[in-house]
Image (cartoon, rainbow, N blue to C red; front, top):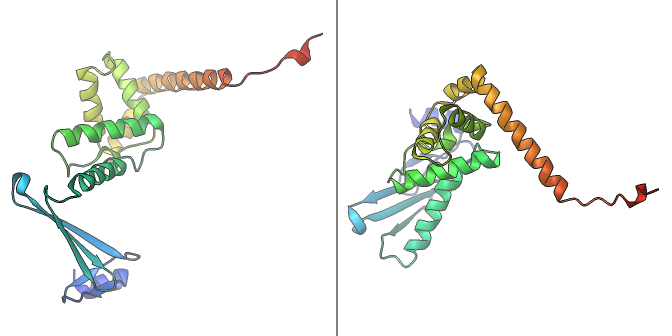
Length: 198
């Protein structure tokens, strides 16, 4: 795409002070680029930040940087937070977080996040299929099922949810959740019925 076409699209193409032209998008104020150079613990991380005023800033660090662990902690935290962008239900959020941590522990950083394809009620869908398959909670089979489902396209997950057999289990699970929520709410509210004593 030419710079003219980019400018027509976003009207926010800036000629940087070093001569590069950067498209910041319709409302963008900065753009980031991360390079990891080298191998092992000696790798150098180079974070380049272009600002809409034409300035460019660079942060370089490796394992010897005094804030290396703080920077790593923030990166991991942000990666996990990004994985739950489409999740609203607590159970869905928990599944996204668990999946993302598993990927990070297996060395998968750039692999598509489960949040990219998450649909509303994902946790209920997973639980329904787990019950249908007869897998024990937190068993190897159940964890594998969760991982496989999380990588399915959104359209495929919606097809599963519309399956009549699965819908029966989902309805049962949602009923159980509603009863548990009502019981918890009831136990937390003490009602004084003394006014009804005759």
